[in-house]
Length: 155
Image (cartoon, rainbow, N blue to C red; front, side, top):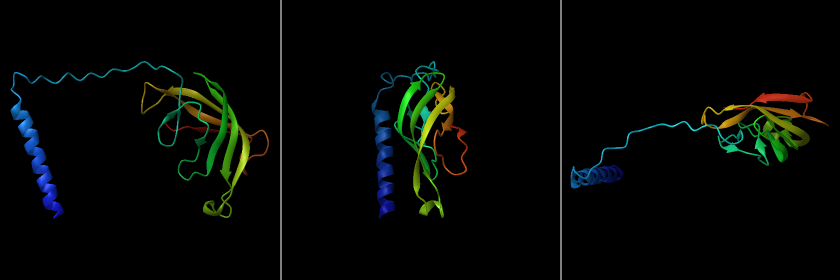
């Protein structure tokens, strides 16, 4: 029954396409416009690309561990966001994964976030994105973390 409905739908679609094309005199049809590709100049401020590949500017929160969600930045207050770098104060929520990540607990650590190394975003080269994030922990920090850690950001 489903195969018959699918076949009927496909046949009706084909007839509609042919009828539309046949019903328009050739003198009325216009040639398709030539395809041109323009490269827009890089404008605006660099963006921070999130886990879902969305460009964000001055986000209040940001997921660092896209795969498992075990580290995220929250309550971000941005004091700088320009072509050179961006800077915010906030909280890094990190899962201690003890005894394992699914049973672990999240702990909050005060953090200063710096974004830099702006360059064209591979997905949209007309947009500039920050390519590195640096986290500085002024007080306590997650176990096995240095006081300052830097990571490359996805492109």
